[in-house]
Image (cartoon, rainbow, N blue to C red):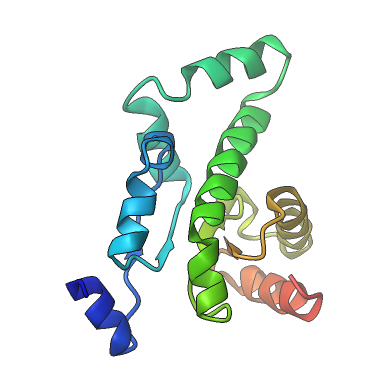
Length: 157
């Protein structure tokens, strides 16, 4: 049993606060999960670092740009793909813990932080696009965000 797994025995879940295509494709996330990592978080800054630190995304960005996608649509496609793939790797943790752990988070566009209705709609859109039971969507903690959280939870999102 690893130290990380021992921590889980005491109720402490270790989550990786980073995601990148290379971690997914080279099997590093799977290795970390085997060591006991129980979830992952992401945000726009994390994705910016992942995209700008190598060439893992270049081909997909080129294809999306050539197809006429906007910068937002490109970002959306890149992040959703990584979240889906990481969620698939963490799915066994999600199932073994009955949904207590095994999540991968994606932040709802922080530019919507002061717009409740738009945040709710974006949360619903991302939920449908990611389409994984262990996708978790972070909502900005503004007054408007709290209303969005209530609406999303009450709607089963």
